[in-house]
Length: 231
Image 1: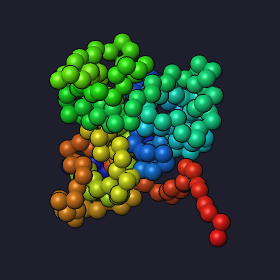
Image 2 (image 1 turned 45 degrees about the vertical axis):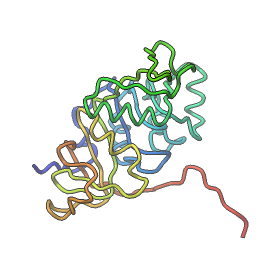
Image 3 (image 1 turned 90 degrees about the horizontal axis):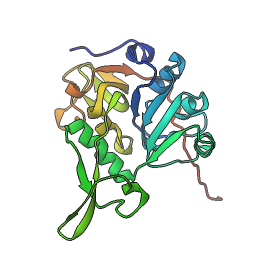
Image 4 (image 1 turned 90 degrees about the vertical axis):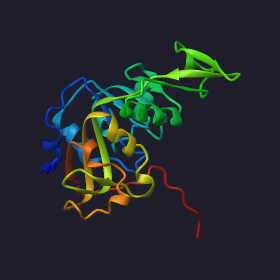
């Protein structure tokens, strides 16, 4: 039952080139920083990434983009990433943009074993091209497929050795859903405690969904876009 690994590099053992990789985070909030760095250090190529966005230049998933390791990106936001923009416009990066709520539900459906769902979001737009549409109670809906990954990399605030996780505020974002949608789910936490120390009423992700867990270190927690006012 002890799912702890000694390092981020050890926790991604078995990862290979060409896999589908989910990574939690929204902007730079709730990013599994240490696990992303481990993927970069391991040199894995041709990654198909599913994430809300792809970090910023040189930060978060941006380090994988900068190194030319990403084959495709499925997400809802380009963000402040000039490398992302350049690779997309030059045709070097395949990009699938998904409405943010639809992205969240596709990931949740993948984790719940749901074969698909209908949503009105995107009907009549390029988002619906090539997809089944259906009229339900006088309104048109688009059939969206679930999303799953070979590896899900997630970030939590606290966890125990059994893999039970608690997220902190908005750093939950996509992490909770992605924890259920990976064939192998690896979590990094800021604080690791012994089983029984977490109040089960506050556990967001039960350990049954988590395969491996590490304690992260040296968090930078950068702000994606800083806005200030004059004093």
